[in-house]
Length: 207
Picture (cartoon, rainbow, N blue to C red):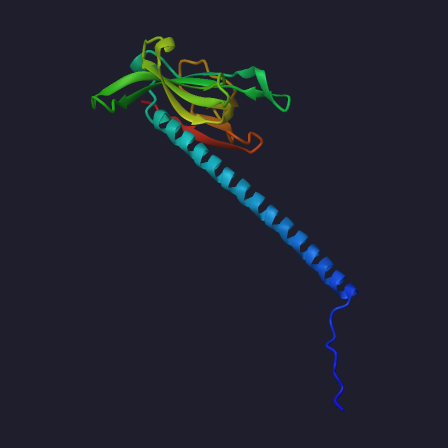
């Protein structure tokens, strides 16, 4: 007479062990995924901030390449060291430097070479600090200057001026400095804690 063989199933202990292992693996996998996603997000944001910094410096480079001396236009480069009094980041007063320089450039509309004065400053009146380029005639009033937005999220700007190998925090001389060093801090508009600080040096070629 044939004996009926009973198939052996899983015990309750084995099932619980498998579920526990799957739970651990799932938890580890979820944690790794979250970390990778967060790292990717930070990398993407910082990459975009780097692009913004390069754009700002390219904007400024155009003006520094066309700066004029006092002998040609009656004005010279002027730099003012300032600190933002009302708004701070982690209790640190924000650098709020301003620079003004005479330039000679081609008018994109008329095609004529024109002389004027350019200023760079941070506007903090809105929700996001924004760097602006102000343009006026050589002898014009800056209150009526043409305002052009350069980049949003420029949290701070420090500008230094080189003379005889020494860097100065401001500039109020009749002669042009040998070079200008610009240091900017840019933050993400939505995640202000995501920030980068970049700097570059512009050599001044006197016209």
